[in-house]
Image (cartoon, rainbow over all chains, first blue to last red; front, side, top):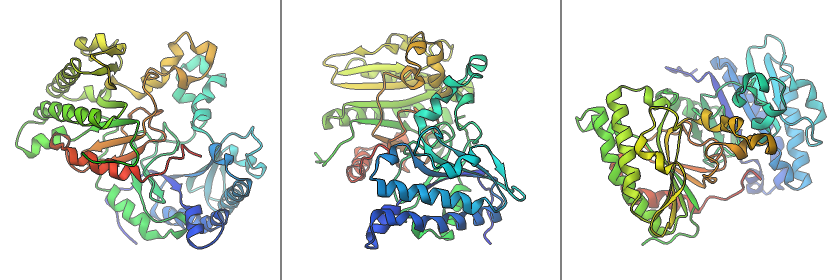
Length: 219
Length: 219
């Protein structure tokens, strides 16, 4: 087991590259998603062992659902499987996304309120049918808004805390709408490997880099 | 002159590392800022030559003004000098920041509305005494808000368009509150060199990388 001087409290995960991985293997694009479930579970187990307090996985977005239906069905199923795989462990689970739309998988409705399993050792959040604009505008429809007059407090993802570190697989150096408020001070680490090629060494590399960064929170 | 397959329409600039540069040279921290003005002008000239349509410089934030007053005074002066240096060229200038606070330099008040100089060949935006929370919450105080009910349209920085590429000097891989809405789909390129060590080759490296990225806007 590696030792670190300093660990992030909350890690955000952008598990990108499933379709490119599938194509490189000679599969159809949509076949990549199911190979992303086991990596998610390995990463969760590693973070639990390290004592990470909170993790957020970028599942799929409303924009993603404009893709061909074979792909949409495949990533919806992968998200349901990934969440249900954790539902029987020691996670404190929350799914955030627009539950009003038909693209939101019904199986995940019970988790749109935080649900504690087993010892609830780690907060694990999944963004499912998420949309950054919907998230930020959520407070307008919220009755609390007129009292606190601060949009940021009333966003749809307000139960998800500030992220310290975001790790993105698949080589792209951008946030792609991932929690605009919680990512503001996050350190951003990009791995060139595709998500289905996950291994723990990649996370150790990210954490070794992270421990030497300073924390200023904009100050 | 380099040729590129594809150029960003709008480039965001995070000119970080002035204080570390000064310390490495044996100067006081606050002495670094004045060495950041000439690089800004060189970068502007290069982008103008390349035909970039819009640039946004991250000047200073409300959080930054909590630093020792010697530093605050130094970066305020550097921002005023940088803006005034462009005011006599062919820029379409805009300064965005909280003008209601004493930390906003009075000399820059005339530019808090977009001001065209010469041929106004490029939109150049400076964030001065900027605060992401203030930016996002601006619409609440805005009379248009009740009609359009979309916070994102009424933000304080709504005259600044979506960024395609953000280049950060000084090695840190984070956004530090830089325009949360406009940075959502931006590609993010980090240079290890400190900002006062600017040279055009650094920008060419960023643009060479950028031309090979795909554009999906979350799709």
